[in-house]
Length: 92
Image (cartoon, rainbow, N blue to C red; front, top):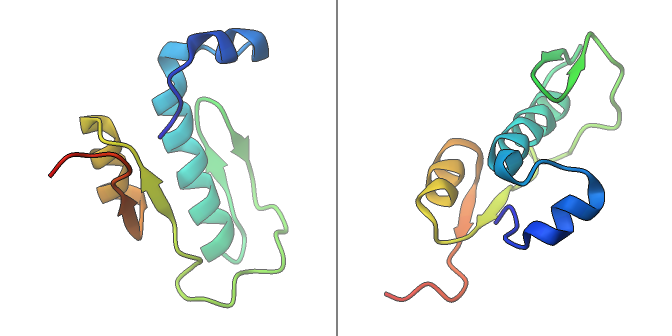
């Protein structure tokens, strides 16, 4: 998941209420870096233009990405960005 303890985010100066959007953007960035020959990204939290990023993963299209969590947002995030979902402590 993206975290749940608000005090941890406060200690780092990261807006707690934006943690999901931040995680989504980082996941999109990781996939861009892993799959593009000239990665570029223009987001709210991260922006770069045609950076060099090597080495690329040997696995294609990229390394597996696993998302954990049982909130609706975690399930949406997993369906959009992940190769798999980790259902830790989620009841059947």
